[in-house]
Length: 202
Image (tube, rainbow, N blue to C red; front, side, top):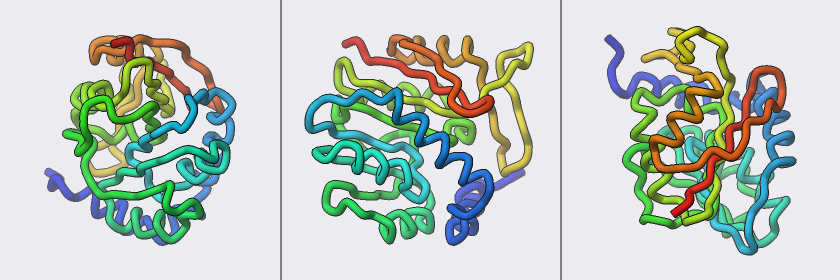
């Protein structure tokens, strides 16, 4: 059995060269497509959950000059890379922590982003409940991950400690609704990388 910290240690080892991997280059291209669907209010306060090396937050800050952003990740090494490449101080900050429970107050953020990370969470419904808690009313959750056409609606891969799980569009919609959010749309960005958008209605 893998220890609880084994996946965190794996990302710590990956951090120095993470941005140069072929998968990471695909992630960055997907982030660029994601921005086509992002709508934020004036002076937005956003969270990038499991931010990795901070590339998405830097893109968002460049696109929205009044944006304030927080990047959260469990990997100290990933966060060191994110802080080194932070081109938008002091508007962007990067902090260490887990996806559940989140260390933030209720209704703190106008938008929450989670890209290529949700598939790693062993307790996904707890993470969604926390996302809903810290979103402001009418705030949007942007969820990007590969999807699956498995008959169960959940695809599993054992390639990392504790494995990875991807979800069909229908299962994503059910999960978000169960957490207290309203599903807005699904959009395929690049290949099977699916954007699912939810809004907190109250």
